[in-house]
Image 1 (spheres, rainbow, N blue to C red):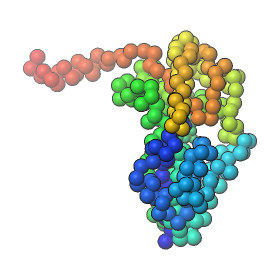
Image 2 (cartoon, rainbow, N blue to C red; image 1 turned 180 degrees about the vertical axis):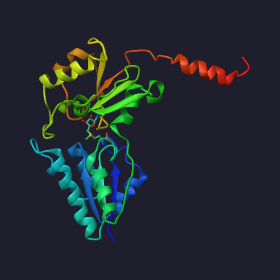
Image 3 (tube, helix red, strand yellow; image 1 turned 90 degrees about the vertical axis):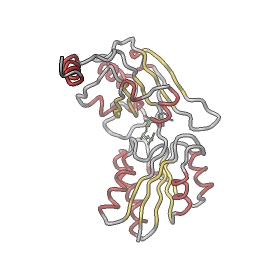
Image 4 (spheres, helix red, strand yellow; image 1 turned 30 degrees about the horizontal axis):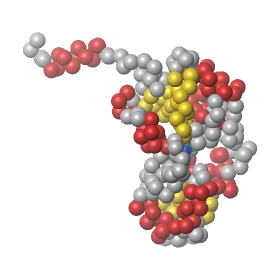
Length: 260
Ligand code: SAM
């Protein structure tokens, strides 16, 4: 009977695909591919010339919710027809990516075997390229529009990473980029927790071996004028030192030295 596996291609063309994912791509009856870069799709088509691109489902002005629903349906049609289906997504298929999670859940709900293979995400590249260890001070990740629209608690002693920052404030979920007035709202929101002159980083991982990553450091309040792409991620480093909880510290001292 049919099955589905969603695999990750990683970020760097030809260099991040793990053997388990490659095997799934080679062995499947039907392969779908959704990569950020046309070259990456061409590369997958070298492994599987019959791989079908999910890219045509995207369109400017079309809600990504509809796009994802159509992608899921395209995959499920083949699973229901009894085929072994592999869908390959750039990065990690389960990181800031709705369609792969939805497809796996739907396939399971319909009684099919479905799973996900992790890949190297933009987040992984970010830690390597920017020299950030999320374990050092902690690291919060949010989708930029969700962050703007909800009352989230920011910890300025941790790193903050905002995804899909070029589309910040796009409630239609259909635009590829918003613009300066939307970014000003984001700056206003961030200014509640950070000084306006705080240094933020626009990050773009390299996707081609000849490229270098983009690491652009600038003041928070200059963000509205920055060049942002669909594949830009905003990193806000900590602005405050860690603050010790002296009450807990006292209790720990008591535990360590009960006789005192
Ligand atoms: N699943 C992908 C992954 O594992 O990295 C993320 C997909 S998410 C829909 C798209 C967002 O990922 C972008 O708006 C950006 O924040 C981030 N992203 C994608 N490509 C990137 C790149 N080359 N460098 C930095 N961030 C990237």
